[in-house]
Amino acid sequence: MDSEDLDFSEDLPFESEDAGSSQQKADESRPAGITPEMSEYIKKIVSEVTKDRPERAGVLEQPEAKRARLDTFDNEVSSIFNACFAGSETEIPEDDTLLDSVVEPFLAGDKGPALPPKIAEFIGKMMTEKLSDDKLNEKVQSYKQPENCDLLQPTRINQIIWDKIKPGTRSKDIKFQKAQSVMVKSMTALAITIKDFLDGQASKRQTVHGMFDTLELLAQGNLQLNFARRELIKTDLSRDFATLCSQNVPVTKFLFGDEISKELKDIVDANQMAAKVTPKFGESSCRGRGSF
Image 1 (cartoon, rainbow, N blue to C red):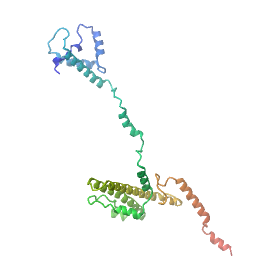
Image 2: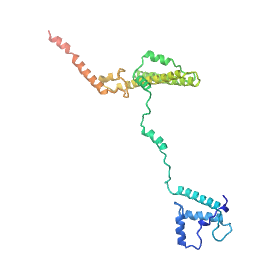
Image 3: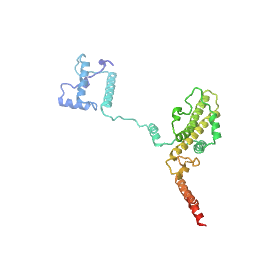
Image 4: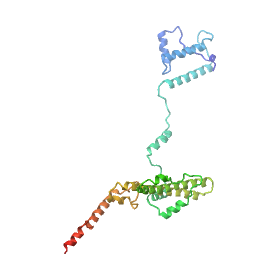
């Protein structure tokens, strides 16, 4: 927009006006947040722009189209200054849909939508019930390590370290290796399933079977990992409660099952009963000598 199209004379007070009245009007017309110093600076810039214009008496009569453009320009400038200097009070239109999409994930908690009942039942069974060794080995052997994935295998211990560790430590580590081996096989099953799907070599049924094999191996690896954790804790328990670490005790969302209080009570009762029916050391021999 050329400077000649703009009429800045309305922004400048006439010299004939009273100074106080002029100052009051200037303060009232000044956009919110504009300090007197800023106003003076703006007037100075305006003066520099208009100083070469020919002086004409009175107020310049602008065509309606030019005056409309001037009003629009003033309004835009005022809006910009108000937004920049009026503080942080910026009006944001309410959008319930956007707000809900942001808030709902935090209100939903840690759980997502329910799975189909059959899938949930399958996962629950695989997470708590150990497969037979034959069936698990068959599943593991059905997925071979890809030739270009050298790291897709259980992590082995360096031989020089293995030779130095205690037998008890070796035994514990072997249990972790077994769990890790099954979990790595689940990754292999998933990778092969993805490859066959992308290559178009697998039908929908085959892809679903591969995904379920992945879930099954993951769940069994996690179950073996829980058994290994029990073995680590076993050394800190009294010998009377060592049976809690048996694989016959089901693993749930708790490592030692949901009925730990009942299990402990049953163990205490069983030990007390065994103490009553089992003769104390040396008791039978004393009775034998007294019978003569």
